[in-house]
Image 1 (cartoon, rainbow, N blue to C red):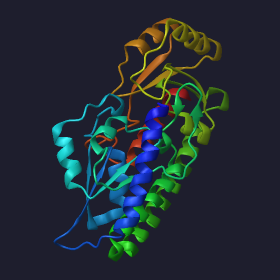
Image 2 (cartoon, helix red, strand yellow; image 1 turned 45 degrees about the vertical axis):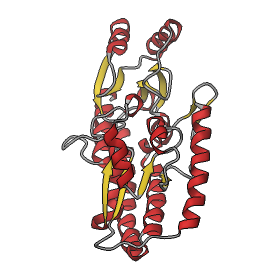
Image 3 (cartoon, rainbow, N blue to C red; image 1 turned 90 degrees about the vertical axis):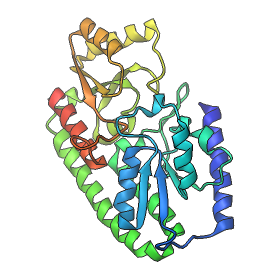
Image 4 (cartoon, rainbow, N blue to C red; image 1 turned 180 degrees about the horizontal axis):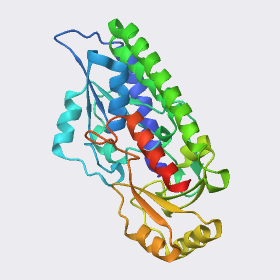
Length: 297
């Protein structure tokens, strides 16, 4: 993990030098700015800022687990056609490193400037987007990048960003109201992998544990770790295990059999859906919060 993070830091440094050397790029009808994001939720965030001035596409399709994604030749074609690539950063896009390594592309890290949570064994937690307040920083980083490439659109990007930030602040207030329905001693989260740290910090939840004790869903727990999680669930009386739709629920079901708790396996934590219930980032967050509150209150 540390090697991957170091690779990203080096890549970002090279990118910064590239940006300085190239300066801004004007856009027009014959040179529309084409932006590629790593994930669907980043694509939605970017579209809210870019409006109609920019063509925005996501490398990963809807419903894809980034931790298990395998790049295809078509992905390289998308990268070659894009003039700006927006990634989450913080070690999240491991699948993308081989595709952009050495490519003369400008890569923007949406989470740049934020202080990530770190674990001595697991490294950096990249799941910052599950706190809408941190996404406000994403918006500012993306807005600056778009204005750098398209100075003529700077006022549009700023106006759109202001509107979207207000929507994110409204979302934060809505989440707080929903969470208040859950008694403080019942705000317990058991998850498939360690994705809820930032969400828990913001909205006063306690993360009891994870089926997969890792920031990636690709890891595997030991028998000792499984036993420890079962003991913690029984001790704290956590009522449910929360999984993303892309997660394998086999181990969660085994734990549920041992503890008698529910398995909620229809959250959308890392990808949007084509249409309801998580067609946009804000829809995704509202859906997840509604399912969590319903299971805990």
